[in-house]
Length: 218
Image (cartoon, rainbow, N blue to C red; front, side, top):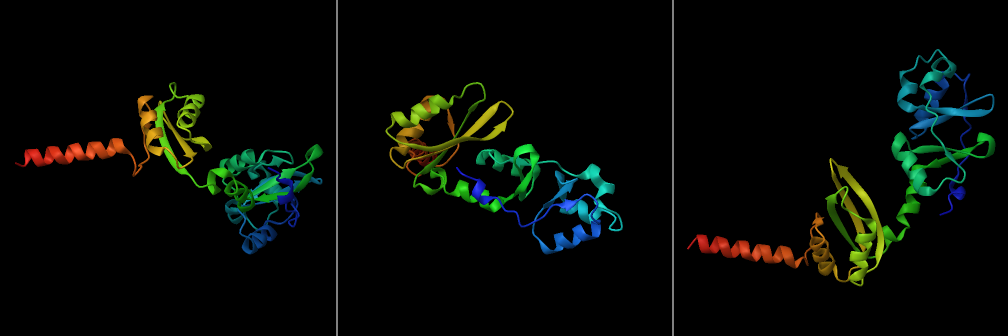
């Protein structure tokens, strides 16, 4: 997906010689978690809102250069990597650098999230299946084969959780053959985490449980 059109350059980076008080004033006016900082015309990092309010406002940013966070993305960075950078640095603003690390502007988190919202994973009609298996035992090719062998399309699949030696995988698939897909996952020793109303396996278990309760209460 093309992300260059989302670059915003309405904020000029603060020079490292800027007063902390001026930075605090800007944070009072904006909703950004960070603002960019430059030195000798080159981007050197971002100062966070939390840090800015903790700094002595009688000093300059140069006195706190050690606290600057140098995170950024490049002009040709893939949008998924940009999303990852936002998450890793807990920021809602992401500086964008071009050739020779020239500061081009920044991305807003909301704009990049809108790209994700426009992917088939979110905007196509389908169902969500969450499965779990040992981290050494699962295979994306096997997962795709299970879905497609039941005549259903895959709109997206990703690892949503890793805990100890277990991995959790979230899929979005077409609505058809959901019960068959779920049963096939179980036959391949996947634990199905998500609940599905059409899951015949769970319906059978409930019927047997109800029957057992009725028998024991006779």
